[in-house]
Length: 274
Image (cartoon, rainbow, N blue to C red; front, top):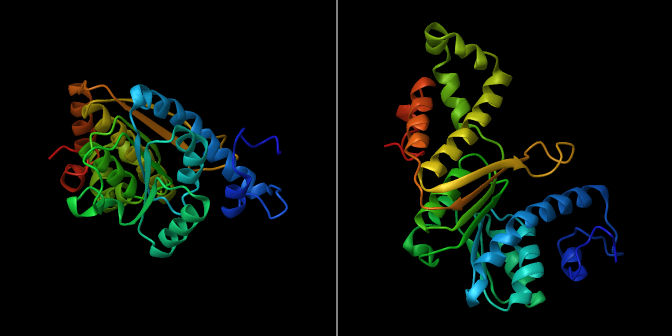
């Protein structure tokens, strides 16, 4: 068995996911992908173990699931051995959903469901998901899909959310639109005068506001790196755990940031400030 693999990991699964070659080897790209998923598993497994106490069957929704690398490995390493709990993979591309359904059936992963839905539509009653979901994950859900995953988690009263945001364009677009006005108003606008800075600041601001939104909604938030930057540039991990303590100061600071950067009109509703 390869040293990089976790004990009990299904070789057949990793071959089906094309993480291992037919000969059972890892190439450089798949090694990097596996390292990211395993590192994320280190954050999620203690949450699942805590939730699985006293016979509870944890429910996990994986948003923007793609080929469901994360969902399948979570099931293989945790849910399969527990004999209870369920994973819902939510993905808008129908071909990937069908492929995941077929793979789960081949492997006998009976408590995995795959839903052909946009993240934004998953919270609706017609989606057919349970009223409560314990853990929400979103690994590299693009642009506003991470915000939709947060909204889903709030709606489903999630005990925890584990988010690795990807490309983000919405805030940068708003900053570009008001750049001339802001340059005349404040020297801070120099932070996004150049296009590359607009993109980078927009991405950073988005994640800062997401964290404040979660804290204002009753979550304790930790922000860290997923893996080393040499493995992925989309590397920020936001871990939120429900405490029920809604921080008024977080809501006030979020409102102030929206106002300072001229974003209130466009984004107040998205970040719970309407």
